[in-house]
Amino acid sequence: MKITAVRVTPIAFRDPPLLNAAGIHEPYALRSIIEVEAGHAAGPRLVGLGESYGDAPVLAALSAIAPALVGLSIHDLNGLEQIIACELGKMPPAQAGAELAPGSQPSRLLPNCLSAFEVALLDLQAQAAGVPLHDVLGGAVRRQVPFSAYLFFKYARHIEPEEAPDAWGEAVTPEQIVAQARRMIDLHGFSSIKLKAGTLPPAVEIASIEALSKAFPGMPLRIDPNGVWSMETAVDAARKLGPLIEYYEDPVAGQDGMAQLHRETGLPLATNMIVVSFAGLREAVAKNSVQIVLSDHHYWGGLRASQHLAVMCDTFGLGLSMHSNSHLGISLMAMAHLAAATPNLSYACDTHYPWVEEADEVVEGGKVPILGGCVSVGDEPGLGLRLDPERLARAHATFNRIAIRTRDDLGQMRKYDPTFSGARPRY
Ligand code: GKR
Ligand code: MG
View 1 (cartoon, rainbow, N blue to C red):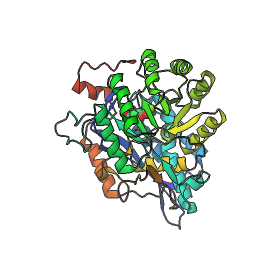
View 2: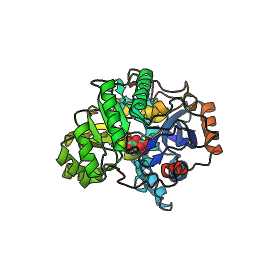
View 3: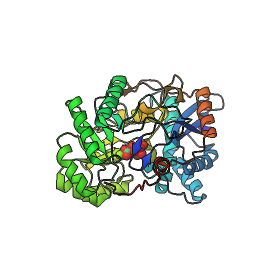
View 4: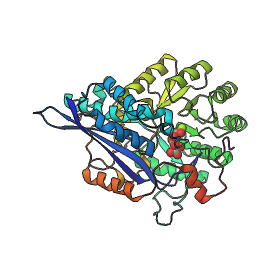
């Protein structure tokens, strides 16, 4: 079965004012929605779906590649990679993207594009065979894929007066973080918690983990300062956090810093920052800088590459979890099918999905449910999703209405505080 048409639609959806080490989220997150049509001359037309970053360099690359895919077999994933490499070779080098979003690093452009189209082709392969995507990935070892409650310090509203406040309210104290956790767990039943840190003074962030541990006894907790703590701060924090957390995610920057921190504290360190490629994994194994890798099919080169990563983690005795940026349901279901077919997934996956407003989802039926802390993968063919044309048109209209074209958390934070340095390490 051959590809007959490819569409890449840029979209935008509302994003709350979430704080992170780079600054703060802008009022809208950008994504691209990929539709790949295929069919035999006489047979029905199938549409495979993908979702990726919506920043300008990625969009430019996806749009340049799309027409070159017409005529390719939906099974020819090696051919897909060759076409992508060839089309990217004709483009000017990509500019650096958002610092905390590994997917926007120029070096990840090929795996980003490969992933965006690979997911759509695997969706097509599964639909053509009448089986769910997890079957094409080797079969589900779990039907309920666990995710964690992803908490953020946040402001009550964006600085832009025209943007309405979200339903979550302010979270800049341990009490407010506990309230945020309660709301998220009440809504989705999560049974582990991740706190995005590296933004408020470490004393507040450590106190927030202590408060979460008291409020949710026995609940696995993680903290992620995105590499902006100094060695001294990270070692000091480890004394208090060590007994409370299941892993310590990117507390300090760099392979050598992480290796030193692990030697000094013995705590299991996780990353989505220093291992974003197989070369980074090789270095991490050599230096023992990381004990848990957070995979992300969007920048690892797709679902099959992520399965290779999983095998590597198993080989080297590393734990495996999953990273997330702001995303919609196509990404969520791709993550869920992959996780369902990954035997050695050892921790609940991250997802920003609870922060998405119901009206902003682009798939039929609205938001994919997260219940009992899990996303279910069923037996519907492929990803099990269809686009809702009206929802997609609305999200595309939002993209056309706004001025944001590349994620800029630092620039956004400087609207609140013109002196904000974004220095690393900061604490
Ligand atoms: O969206 O603010 C955010 C996150 O900080 C994101 O950019 C990170 O890539 O969630 C991510 C992480 O775990 O580091
Ligand atoms: Mg992280």
